[in-house]
Length: 145
Length: 61
Image 1 (cartoon, rainbow over the protein chains, first blue to last red):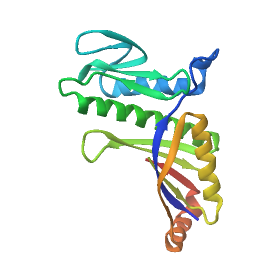
Image 2 (tube, rainbow over the protein chains, first blue to last red):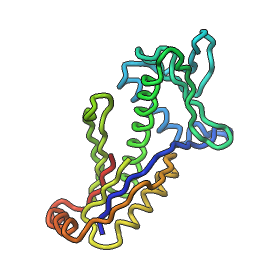
Image 3 (cartoon, each protein chain N blue to C red):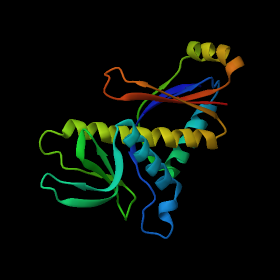
């Protein structure tokens, strides 16, 4: 029986508290997803963001883009590994922040699916195309046995 | 995220879906299923006609 499924996704990496946790595969995927998102949006990866007043806030990763120079921070909950986003959208940046957040989640999920399918011995192909609304992209990860 | 499991004649695709879901949890992606549709026999037959040459297929968008 073949099937079609739709899912909502949430990223939860290894909590950073234990020794060597930052070398856990989930942290590596998070780093790759942050770097891919920065490249895609013409930005760079830093370790802090700023708020409207210029106050600096440290994060595990910060995505600073031309569209949102204050930066979107990525902070992992030490207790649960839940990935949280820090940002100050004051001044009408909500849409920009949403785009960065969605791109990061999409890149992380695509990387994880490709890796999971490879572990399951599928041959993996990844295709990217502009989304119909021209705002984001569509990623197809294809696994063939 | 959507997943399209194609070319599976039996219950094997449910097992593959569960295996994928468990691996993704280990890789930091927690999935909550929001929609599910088993394919009808005609769709599966069409896929199997193609898949005799191309193999089984999982697509994630």
